[in-house]
Image (cartoon, rainbow over all chains, first blue to last red; front, side, top):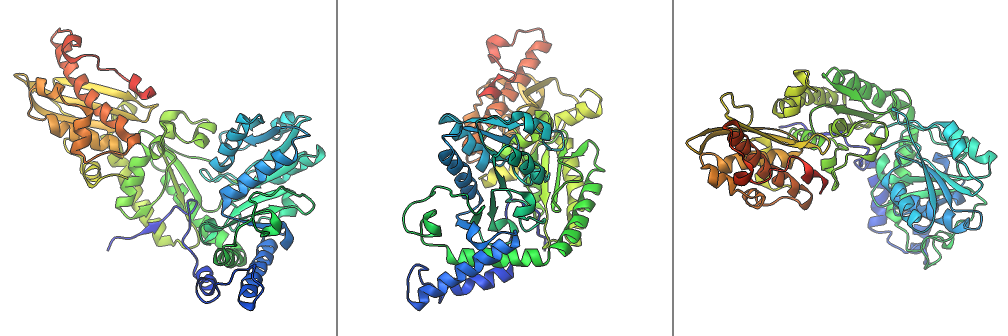
Length: 392
Length: 140
């Protein structure tokens, strides 16, 4: 039988057994509405509040600072749009980066159409911002700095604690999209000094469709969804009880095993990087040091990423690419362009994202399958013949 | 998102590689857009006796190259010039909307090779082949 290797954990993860088991009662016998006062309802309410405490503890927050959302994108939307609404008297200027997730970027683009001004900080070839440029970008009417904690395509970890320090001096709110970080690297809201932080359960082996927004105590954000009084009236709608319970169980498990997982996953990632960089005309994308433990991301010249991903799929390997052809536009990913890759090279990107579910045998298999696929696609590529003949 | 036929032509492309005795070579697309097709033909007595391709591009780009070469192999130049991108798409049982441009590239690749055939004989290809639009379609 052909081997199956899942190496797209930045896309989503398999649900952990612990999370599934924690969820099952709330998908079966405990179906009560948490807002109901009878015991079946109270059972659900208690489950939600226990989960809230666990999630808060996992990121160094207080339970009342955690608001459940329908996922990371919703948390990002809520944080950014609420600050714009709340701070409209102070100003409408926001600072972000060129490499944010679309949940942030497209929200900012929409707000620009409504009169907001946004500064997108450029990044260097590792995907790092310059703190001096951040300082220079701050204006009297700057109301928010929203910068991701770790990038989903290239794995670069950004210096959020330093960003917050600068923001504090100027009295500016800070939001971070920590969707790729939470459950994988230490995240502590006080150490980071952020006012808002987004997380999503399915990136750390929790269920899909559930996430949370951390909102620092004392910061009152306007309601995102109006209706019933759920989430202190800020996010109405009957709670996704099983999802919330599953998220807490998955995060608790990830935190308990974090040191061990980081060691194991980093070793596997480094083996991928070391060996795949032996392929001619390849390069690593993202920061080689300040990097998520599970992200091995590359570009291979003279081939196109979608062909590579489809070929890997035929071998049972799930991976992804930021090539144009994996999207509707003809442009490669904004992240790969922002780190300075020319279009033609950015087209040949490959992202392998592993987690603690992967094994050394998975890595052996990937290392055995990737080089011949690249060789085959290059053999087929008219660019390759020019490249090796020195014409490119 | 891809049909079985597309996946088959991507995984087992027909007529792939160079043609050593080609007397017509056309290249369309550009690396910036993420796809380049190079079509090699051996034309004798106005008939495409042999054909091959090399393609840099996505699954659809490789599959449309493969299918286009199959559709014109053994055909007269006139028949090959009548090949439309629509015929390539139909032969593949369809393409996702974002990938239709790959079939346009395949049609243009065939025309570019035929244009090269005429040029090599000192004949202006434009009245016969029409514009074989090198890459400007990429903007669309």
